[in-house]
Amino acid sequence: MALRKHQRCGRPVEIDGVSSPAEVTSKLLASLLNTHYDTSTSVEGDASAEGGIKVASMQWTPLGRGVMSDVQLLDVSYESTCEAGNIPSRFLAKFKKEEIPLRDLFTVEGRFYRFASKMKSAEGENDGSGFPFRLVDAVAFGPSWILLEYISAEDDMDIIDVHEGCPSERFDDLLVRLARIHATCWISDDAEISSKPAPAISSLLRKYACKLSPAPGAGHTLPPSGRQQQFAPGWPAVRERMMPYFQSEYGTQSLEKMDEIVSWTSQSSRIADIARSVAEKKCTLVHGDFHIGNMLLEKTQHEDSGERKQPAPWLVDWSMAGVGNPCVDLVFFLILAAEAIPTYEMSTEGASLQSTTEMTTERVGRILKQYYQTLTAGEQDEDTANTPLPSNRTQQPRLQWEAFLSMFSECLLNQFIILVCYDSLCRSMADASPDGPTFHHHFDRVNVRCARMLLSEFGIPRLMSERMNSSNQ
Image 1 (cartoon, rainbow, N blue to C red):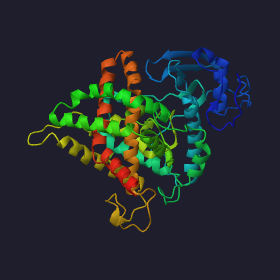
Image 2 (cartoon, one colour; image 1 turned 90 degrees about the vertical axis):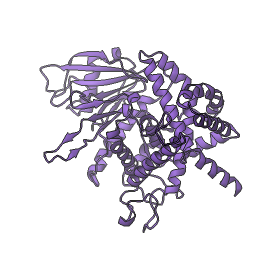
Image 3 (tube, helix red, strand yellow; image 1 turned 135 degrees about the vertical axis):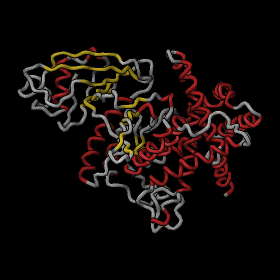
Image 4 (cartoon, helix red, strand yellow; image 1 turned 180 degrees about the vertical axis):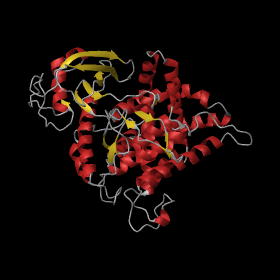
């Protein structure tokens, strides 16, 4: 077991040979901490060097949460003869689960945190605007583990499970922060997508792009051939579980439209074409698993003047991050968190059941406009700041409104394909969980929410129209 070459500058140390808590010895941990926190040790991390800390004891505590990994809490005490200074005494470690077939999760996450440490320096040297989310400090990582500083989440922090959805009072703020991530890290050179010079941080992101996930996003590593094989056969089971959400005559018609969508999508090379179109738009940094369960939200504070203050939340689990299509994050956030998107049919007095699709279109439209305005903020003239459509601008935005809508509809259908392909795996995970019914209900709502948006004007109607126009040209 050997530490890889590194600079002692606060970046996480990359190390091979660790796959369980038992393999993290006191000497190894001291070596990692001395290196990461830049104490006066040698590059080899000799814990006995003068000025370096020494670990007296360690205690591991399983946290019992983490679908993709074995999450452990690590409490450390240091020898009284050394000065630990501001080095933490509590850490969080994640270890690979053998039953999870995904590879490179921790390598990608660790390398993202290396990029983040450089990004913080770049921000300090440039505009100082700051990343829209707070990022945890990573100490060490390898193919089968990652060691992070522990974020104390006690009385002043809200931890929300993914199945609970995003609190309505937090949704707009998180949506805007997502758009700010994408704007800050925009790097696209595609003239058809972007005609705006990339931010200063783009050169740094370009250097790290090859070290992150080549296909950022949950399920996006599934090749098109696998999607083609699993999508149509997997649809009947998904459809059956969706039926309680489509109980009316109009709901039955909606499911029949979904049958048509599945049939149309499965024809020819459409699944591969959609996957390729989504993947080739490498515009910006994509988190890949952007949902409320990967955030720690500080409770809203109030100023003396009564002005409401929303502290920057923590955004964790960057194991699927990479340079990719920003709508991958946007779609995933909406299907997992947007409670504004109806699941059950809207059957209010005086309103037709068909208003469910109309309401979905209206609400999705509002969300897309808000995201787009934030993404292109600073590029708009004052007289066009309240409209998403760039009509009277003196310069073109980094992303055209119509191009953005096309990217969104493609990502939406692509995500639905992935959901159907992975539904049986998700159900198996739910069956193995003590909270099985809760997770089944969560997966049902995610699928239904995605279907509702596909049926809206921003989903399959737009996509099919574009494909028909393209074929007629």
